[in-house]
Image 1 (cartoon, helix red, strand yellow):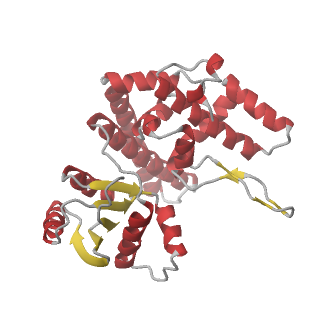
Image 2 (image 1 turned 90 degrees about the horizontal axis):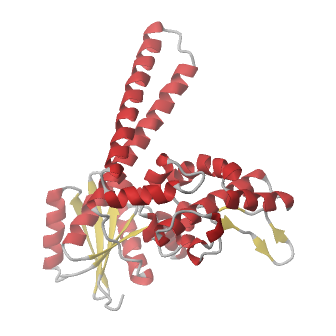
Image 3 (image 1 turned 30 degrees about the horizontal axis):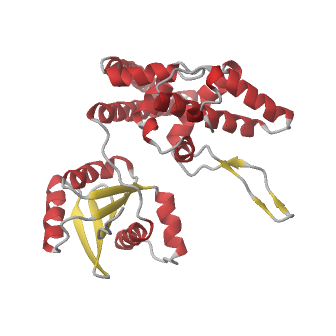
Length: 327
């Protein structure tokens, strides 16, 4: 970013948000309601501070910050949505001792000034709708799993058993409804349909996994490595000198839900995807444990998905050496 815009750190909560504006080497703090009216008041306040354009930075907190990020982007500001873990460790590196909304906004402003995180842009309307459908479907599935667990506990009262079964039946109907809505939405949009077809050409990836990968705009990452880091399926190696040699494991600083979505497809890919089957076979010969093999399969599957989306070429084992598919 060539122009050093004033950093604006934003700490988002459900009902409110705190901001910290770094201008002329001083921090200016203010709190607002997390509503459309609060967003408008923030815009007015920024003009009063003579901050016509800022570099706003906030943590990735799901839906709470979406509307504010979109509002600031539409107002012409630069917006970054950063990994909360990165900001947390940045604060620790600065010996931040307190944990308040105001302090968090201050740390985010300092992080923005120091690191200048990548600018964010909102997804296309059809992708935004898909994100909302996929997120709500996941919520329904989580709730159904809870009801299954309650039923498995065998509550003694028949009334409770009946109520649980009624909720499971309702959730099954809603899940079926939203699965169809996602299928129809992708099928009715040529761009989304093309991405789905590319992803489903990879053995191991079905419509559920494809819809999640499309929803995160996988092809917009800078590289397959960046996508793997986002999902938290990159290997974490602990070696130092001659005495520290810990087992490699997945670096789980990333999107937990995406890792969960990739798990079962990776298990299928180990059996049916020739590239991943060969990869895990080599790891088994080197006596790697099961979780290392599964983690490698998840990493490879995500890289293959990135490759077909980026290149526009359906999966073919002969293209294993294609630069787009390199891991």
